Amino acid sequence: MSIVITIGAFGGKKLDEYFQMTTPVFTIVLSLLSIAAALYLALKDFIFPPKS
Image 1 (tube, rainbow, N blue to C red):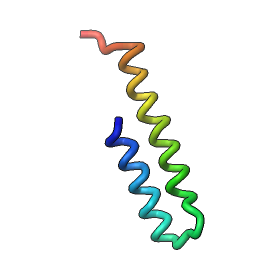
Image 2 (image 1 turned 30 degrees about the horizontal axis):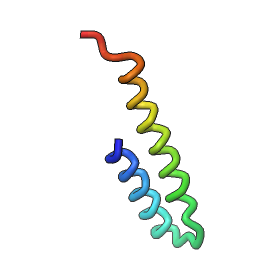
Image 3 (image 1 turned 90 degrees about the vertical axis):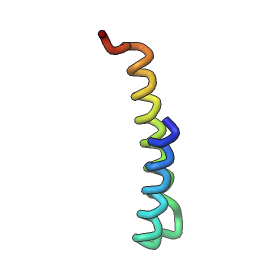
Image 4 (image 1 turned 180 degrees about the horizontal axis):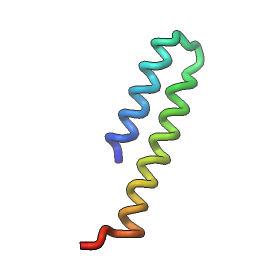
């Protein structure tokens, strides 16, 4: 979970640097999206465990 969030935040930071943004728009958006994705992946496995 933390890896997904870290990749999203790092990618957003790099995009902000690349486009020379004064406000960290990409960092905020990608961080929030990565948090949502990490929660989805964790809850999906918790609520609907894989059948073996």
